[in-house]
Image 1: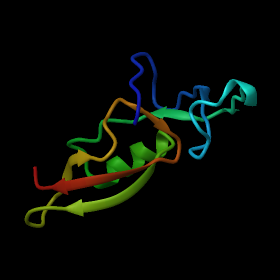
Image 2: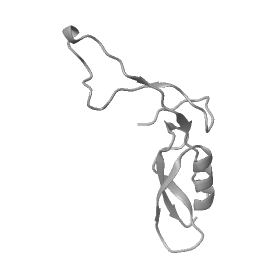
Image 3: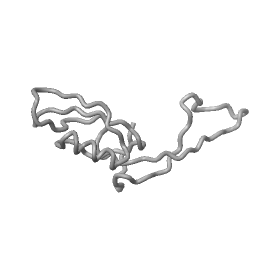
Length: 105
């Protein structure tokens, strides 16, 4: 789940702690403690609502994100982004695929 950081811009990077999904959250004291530290490059997800699919793709690339699936609803015509799969102005790992729902304005 993305986290919100108020003072960041698209392209900013942050260090983060993580653990493998298979690692238990708690270990017995006799096993000792182990911490898996890795650096994850995060970026601010732009608000794509109201933009054309081409504009949205350009903004995603500039932020280090990837365009996912584009789903069209309604009749054909000049489409704009109605919704996006990753909430705008949240922080996500670089390379995250953002799906778009597009339709007529």
